[in-house]
Image (cartoon, rainbow over all chains, first blue to last red; front, side, top):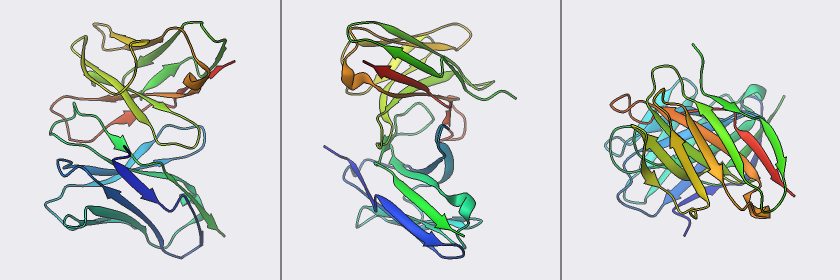
Length: 114
Length: 114
């Protein structure tokens, strides 16, 4: 059972454009939703995260939109740059503190053309 | 400030063999989690260690075992290797009571089973 579904599988955007990646979850007990960025040969790095008590969180060019009723959340990358080309993973977990497990989506390969 | 370090970076084994992967957490962190990332997939949670005990476990067989040492470093052991165990094994560290969600990943150990 795939608890976190991510789309699209791949995405090509022109420099300066907006990249949008979507995720849907099934487990209503999830209460923490991070996005990770992974470059080839590297481990995933936390990009931005949100909790369900807010509908949007923005950090620089990166914004998470969260829809609790639809059980969906998305990552928007504004003014996309070639350096943003990477694989992006959404994830979800339940429980507080840092001793919990993350359930990841399958990832989106983003390519930003110059 | 050293991040999460893993060794070895690459290794090749044959079916039926055993493998040990090692992880040193980020300085100041006390919790280590292990994830398996198959090619083209998101990371999957294997287990988590805190205070030298396994605290949580994902859906992995008993062939996967681990250990945490008093200095917080950790090992992942896989016995009776199968072809399907070929993957990138990621170690992530965190601090119990620290900022929620701040999982720091290493660059991984790439295991190939022939």
